Amino acid sequence: MAIFKQEQKLDNILKKAAEFHGHLGPFLVIGVRMGLIGVRELKAKENDNELRVTAMLKYSVPFSCVIDGIQMATKCTVGNQKLKLIDSSGITGEFELQQREKVTVTVNPITFNRLKTSLLSNNCSQEETQKLAHMIASMPEEELFTIESK
Ligand SMILES: [Zn+2]
Image 1 (cartoon, protein in one colour):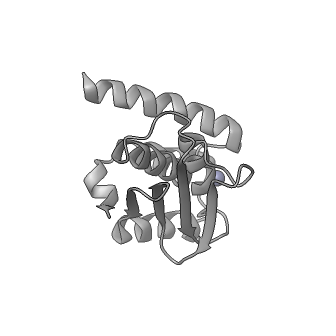
Image 2: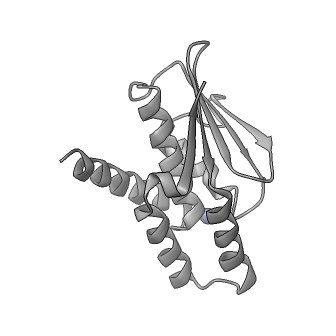
Image 3: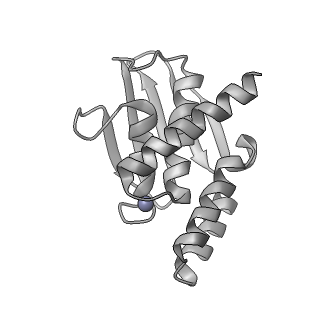
């Protein structure tokens, strides 16, 4: 039941995220899932005022699509200055409840490279991109991410 609820929640946020972002792609899904994990691991409340996020990634499409996913899942945005961006070759989200706990969620480098190859090499069609998005949405969490609490 708990798992079912989680999937429903992911589905709902993904729909909203795709609407906001303009399309559904695997990196958007990664962002939404990272955000949900960060909120869950910190036991943050919905719209938690103390939540801060740092997104470490390459600031170009499709990697930057992650940002919109994180924003949808955490309500920490560039606009409200609760989201900071740091340039990085990988993809990591650092979630923090002010001066208390911190959790980092990093995309598994093997999955990341696989995605990069299939998205960038053959100029992925919209249909293929959506297929990849669904694959990422249903991939087991421990296969997709490394989660570390500090
Ligand atoms: Zn995108």
